[in-house]
Every structure is written in structure tokens, then in C-alpha cells.
Length: 332
Image (cartoon, rainbow, N blue to C red):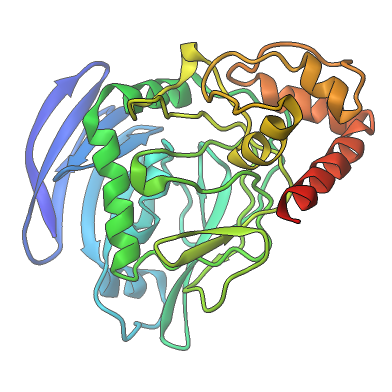
């Protein structure tokens, strides 16, 4: 377990330092703490939302008891319990990735809503295995990235702690805490390079159950033995890799998903596409059969609107068909 070692003002929010200790520990009470950059050891967890008045760290047994769920036979995992105003929130540590994405969940009981992504999340135990479920709740459509989201992305590029955060996700996977199986995911692009300090960002995130994976799924790539099934290419994804391995985002441009860049764009252009730079869609669209109707640079929030337009006017099916044809050609 951890407890607060110190709190320091950091920008408009606070930096909370934790140290390890056994047992459930109250971490602190805060008045009008609207944004917290929380450091847990070398790992980073961002919290944002309504007034955060209380934060408690409990073990999974207590979490399951509070949630009215049976206790698993697995090892005891940490669970973050946040009180936002009068609402109690339980966040399993195995779902710590939600914290990175800038979410604070708010609902009286499980399943709860993660405010920034509008995910419905529930925690259950089946056959002795602890499971976290992410289900579709709303359609984001052309919703642009919030300033908070963009600020968190900029933070990731500026601090080495961001890369250490993803190392913690790797550790979770190695311990079997982060067993993942996504049979009906509607997120495009791969959850690629998580252990190398990269991340993904989606305008629509509809995930199915997360459970230990037993066998590989088609059209998937693996993360330390965990495989993610991927469907419709409909994602905004910042590409964070430069030649020297440093991270990129924001002002240096946005890219399509790994799937689209690696499987589609490079073969079409006859060369390896450089991740990160502001790329024009004109020639890509022309080759994909849209006649260059939609033009513009790939910028934060822009790609989601562009994809939505393609869907509304019926062009998306044409693009998707060509994507699949190129994909099969590459595999053959």
C-alpha cells in the first residue's frame, strides 16, 4: 500500500507523493483540488474532474466487499477509492491506464462512468478470476480533444516519468494483473509499443471484457503475451517516436493509427512514412478513392471530424474496403 508523503503545488494542481505501507490508508483530504498530478513511486497517475475531497487506497478484498462482489482467490491487488464531492469512486489499480487518460470516475456504485472517456466500467469475479469490463456508453462522434487531454499529452512528452509510467503497465502485464482480451473492440490502431513509452489516443473507445487471454485473435498484435483484437480504423493517435526515441505530440503533428500508417500509407507512397510530421491527406485520399474531396493537415481533433464526414457521406466504406485490400496484399 501507499500513503501520502507530501503534497506540493504544481501549476494549477497539486503533486502528491506516496510511499509504500501495508494496510488500507487514508491518503488525504483536499478542498477544491481540481487537477492532481499524482506520483506513485516512479509511476504517474493523473486525476482531474470535480472537487476531489477525499482519496483512500484500499486492497481488492475491501474493494470487492464495498462493491458487494465475491472475493477472488488471486493475489490482493490495490484499488484506489476516490470521493468526488459526495460520490464514492472505486478504481482498480489494474485499470490504472484510465488515470493516465485523465479520467475521474463519478457514480454511486459499479459500474461507474469515467468522465473524460464516457466509459462504463464494472468489476466482477467469474470462476475465481477478477475481471474489469469496459462497455460502450456514448458516441463521441467528432468531439475534439479537450484542453486537459492535450495538456496531459504535452506533459507526457516533457517528463521521463511518462515513460516510467508505461513501464509500470509492463510490470502489471508481467505479473498477470493486466490480462487483456478484447473480442469486440472498436478501436483502430494497435496498442503498440506500450512498453517503449508510447501510448494511444482514441476519439471513440468501445472495449469489451478484459480477461486473461488464452489464445491469439485474428488481426492482433501482442503485448508481453497479451493480445489485442483490433477492428474498425477510427482513431486519432499521436505518434511519439523520433529517430532518437524521444516522444512527439501536438505542435509537431498527429498521425493515423499504426495500422493505417504501416499497412497502408507506406506502400501507397512507395516509401516509409515519417511519424509525427504534419501530413497532407490530398494524395492519400486520391489513392484511396475519395478523389481528394477532404483536405487538410492532421491536427488534434481534426482527424475525428474527417473520419466522421467520410462515414456520413458514405465514403468510409470505400476507404475501408481499400484498406482491407491493401492489408491482405501486404500479408500475402
